[in-house]
Length: 172
Image (cartoon, rainbow, N blue to C red):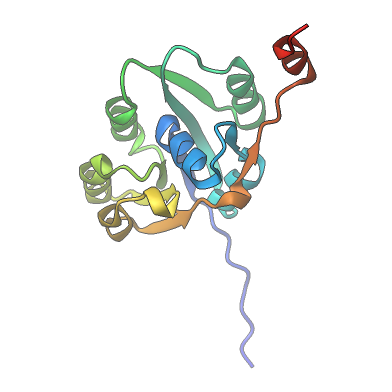
């Protein structure tokens, strides 16, 4: 019987998240407006023993949770980037800027608008993975990516309203 040596994977990974796309997909999947990603279980699953180089959460809108930004910074040295309109252009620009600094880019979105970005990054020699909700992911994106990780209900949690908010909402 042959003896195999342990294989050490030393890839660097950037995770770029289209926050609005993922949030809407989670809300549709769970039928809960307060559904959020469980980063503590999802990020290790996406990394699969590879090194995290960057984690950037692109979010359209003015109301970006400071708690989310703090959590991503403290736990993953990540950041939240507010976007004027959709995340498509800022995420694409960032992906092309970091393409030569990482081995793999995980795009968390099922939006077919990213197909040309996926093709470009692969042409530059970058491994491109898509992580998204299967029901909300364009088949062309799944087919073109090097790997697809479905985000499921197990990768999210439902934010429960705090007691203070409940008390505030009660009528006297």
